[in-house]
Every structure is written in structure tokens, then in C-alpha cells.
Amino acid sequence: MTDTTAASTAVVDPAAHTASMVGHHYRMPDHYEIGREKVREYSRAVQNLHPAHLSEDAAAQLGYDHLVAPATFISVIGIIAQKAMFDEVITGYDLSQIMQADQRLEFHRPIVAGDRLTVDVYLESFRQMGGSDIIVTKNIVTDADDRDVMTTVTTLVAKTGGGADTEALAMAKGVMRSE
Image (cartoon, rainbow, N blue to C red):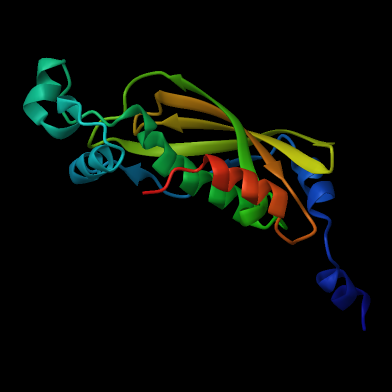
């Protein structure tokens, strides 16, 4: 086996790799366009039936030219951005072994139908504690004119080494709502 082959097949420790990537910035390669029907669909799915999410007339009465997305709509875009970060930058983790521990949202303005949003994802910090990897990311969401729409800071707890934590799964099942 050549040195090149050995290097390409070497297993990289996800924690060591992530620690080395702190400060890295990743821009989503394409924008996410907020569709009018997606706003309505999401609004119904999360049972947020405020008229401004469903009717252009109701949104206009509040001063908006288009439907206003529920505040939690950002989760749709956030999931895409975080997955891309784990695919491109923070590699080696099993996404089923990652739990969101905290999230702070700073709203600069509402998301509205017709927005073309771009997300810049930053790996803010990394540390290990109690056998877990604590990863903090910051997402800055901007519109087509490069104006800030939202800033989110998310703390993730990751386990490495495979295998589901049955105790954590049982605890999560106890708090999850199902119908």
C-alpha cells in the first residue's frame, strides 16, 4: 500500500476534525425561494393559522406585499443549511446521533413569500464534555439584496462511536408527542 493510499483510507476522528474547523464559514451554494403555497402549507402543518400566513389581503392589512411566513418557517431552511454543513465541513458524524440542545433566534424582519434567501453557516465553537461533542453554529440568513433577515445560533450535542443511546432514546420517546 502506498503512502497516498494509506492516507486516503485513514479514518479521521470527527472531533479532531471539527475542532480544526472552528471559524470555518460555509455559504449555501444556492438561494432558497419562499413560495406562497409553501408558506400556506407550512402554516397549516404547524397549525399557525394567522390570516397573514394564508391571505395576501390580510398580510397587506399589516403592511406586507406578500404572505408572511410563520416565525418557525426558518426551520425549513435551517435543516438544509445544517445538513450541508455536516456534509461539507463537519464530517464523520452520524446525523441520527446529534441532538439540538439550544437555539437562539434574532429576527431582523419577517420572512415573506417571494424572498430569495441565502444562508451563511459558521462553525462558532467546539468542545467536548461528558463524552459528547458540543458544536455551536451560527447561521446568518440574508435576502437577495444581502440584507439580514435572521441570525440563529444553534448548540448541537453529538455522540461518536456509533450505536444509539437507548437511555436517551427512551427519554426522548417519553417527551415526544404522537397522534
